[in-house]
Image (cartoon, rainbow, N blue to C red):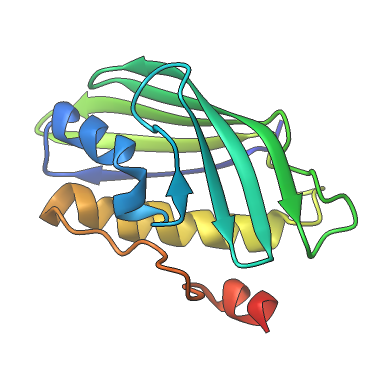
Length: 157
């Protein structure tokens, strides 16, 4: 599959990186309800009337891996509102010499999906900018209800 994937390296430990990934409100959105840091925990995300989803944390290996399963999804801007449903979101953490690499993969988010451009742009912003900043500086740039990316701004109109 050609699932969306992106990666970056940081000057932090895998343990700090793992902790930051699990602080989903600190890098993705403050509109998260439910636990994001325990296996079996389920949380809801929403962005205005544009996107809602329910996610279950399925795997947590400290300093190494975080996996989420999208249980339900709604997009207002796609013909198939459920495109993310039953996809997995995986954060692989590894140490490479004196740096930590984060490899993010949204398994099942493929170019054939109508939402692919908008979603890959969104993940690119939240992962490569906000999550990276949270790991490196302790402060991310999560969505607090206003559009963050060019696509979000267009869809929120």
